[in-house]
Amino acid sequence: MSNNFKGKIALFVIGGIAMFFAVTAIVMWLWNLLLPEITGVKAVTFWQAMGILVLSKILFGGFGGKHGKGWRAKEKFRQMKEEHCGMSEEEKQRLKELWKKRCETTGFFGKSE
Image 1 (spheres, rainbow, N blue to C red):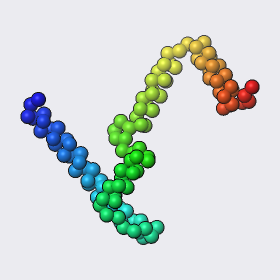
Image 2 (spheres, rainbow, N blue to C red; image 1 turned 90 degrees about the horizontal axis):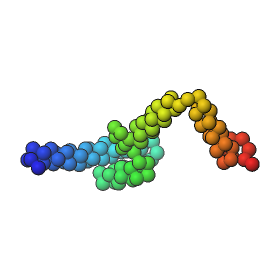
Image 3 (cartoon, one colour; image 1 turned 30 degrees about the vertical axis):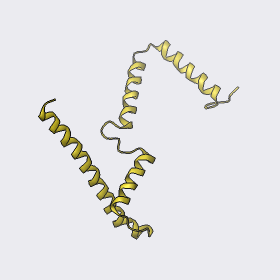
Image 4 (cartoon, helix red, strand yellow; image 1 turned 180 degrees about the vertical axis):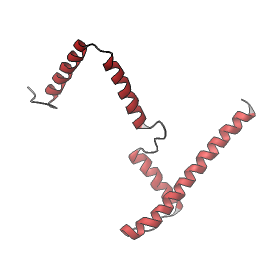
């Protein structure tokens, strides 16, 4: 590996850590600015704000970034749409009947028998 590449990796890691600390400081600032007045909770320290940030990541799975969950769902939808557009009318009708049967047997639509 070249020194230039190692330097970029180090910069990326240090930048990521710095960004995490900056976001933690923003969470602390917003919490202490808004929540004590609105809900009457206590102000939090920097480390408590970091804990809140990590806990929210665990519970809600946020911070998806550019290619988060929404991107994957859109990509899958696009692929399905392309596949469906390439089908003949016969194939589309068979697919509709198949899904209708599946939905009826599971009780999702209509009555299950």
